[in-house]
Amino acid sequence: MGNVFLILLRFGYHILFFLLEFVAIYLIVNYNQSQKEIFINSTNILATSVNQKVDDLERFSNLQQTNDQLKLENARLVERFIQENVNSTAQNIDTLVSDSLKYELIPATICNSTYTLRNNNLTLCQGSLSGIEKDMGVITDNGLVGIVRNVSPNYSRVMSILHSQSLIDCAIKRNNAHGTLIWNGRNSRILNLIDIPKHISVLQGDTIITSGYSTIFPKGILVGKIKEVTLANGSNSYDISVELFNDPVTLNTAFVVRNKQAAEQLAIESQTSQ
Image (spheres, rainbow, N blue to C red):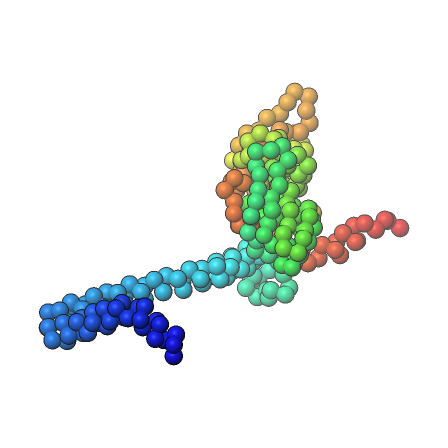
């Protein structure tokens, strides 16, 4: 009781002031029609503004969930595209259920990357807890990104296609001629396709795709188009410049490719002939 008395003694004038202010406002609003209308209008404007802020905050809080859902939906669409290339004889791709697909895509966010070095790498903000494992391919819906080299529970380290040790089996879509895609360490949008014999027809503008010869990348993933073709004197294969469809500098999301049959294929290929 003593504390209440001390509070009233110390802040009594302030409390009385605010009480009188409240009474004055109440009398003005209730007994003056124009002021009442102004008060009601101002209250409505304030309530509308507060509701808008609350709605904006709720939409923002749901943005990440919506973004993740869009990534999953996009992954499923790309999976169907990949499966259609792998099973080109299927009458209707819609009849394939998810469990029967050879490849599964894991949506991932790129949280760090380099592209100006001789050996470039990326970091994904997803790891083994998301199902990512070493030697899985990384793609986008418009091209190649790299190959997973190291994995922790929540992160993955990816060797970029812009790396001196990157060797990816690719093919010319028009005639299925196979070669190896490498990076010369200069332009981040230009790679080289090597080991294409000189008797093969190679045209500027030809589309380059993944060959499907490895367990890392499915067949038919778009890579780029041929920008320039040269044949050095005495050489038996072309020097082919490929302009990527992807721009590695601007990437911020990707898909990690899980080949459900990779272990079986590697096991049978490792067996020696009897």
